[in-house]
Length: 75
Image (cartoon, rainbow, N blue to C red):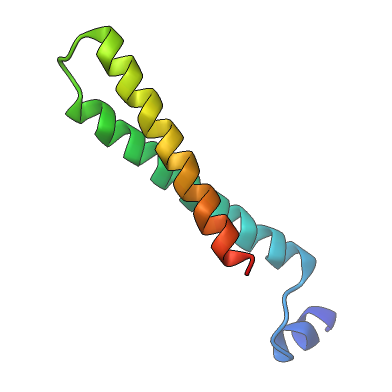
C-alpha cells in the first residue's frame, strides 16, 4: 500500500531510487569503457610508449568531460 501511494504521488521508494541510480551508473561506466576501447583500437599498431601516452591523455580527457558534465548538472 505504501509503495502504491508513493508511486501514485509521483515519487520513488528507496529501493526504486537505488535501482535507478545503479542503472545510471552502469550506463555511464559502460560508455566510458567503450570510449576507451575504441580509442585503444584506433591506436593499435603504434609503438608502446606513444600508445600509453595517448591512452593516458584519453583517460584524462574523459575524466575532464565527466567533471564538466557533473558541474553542469549541479547548477
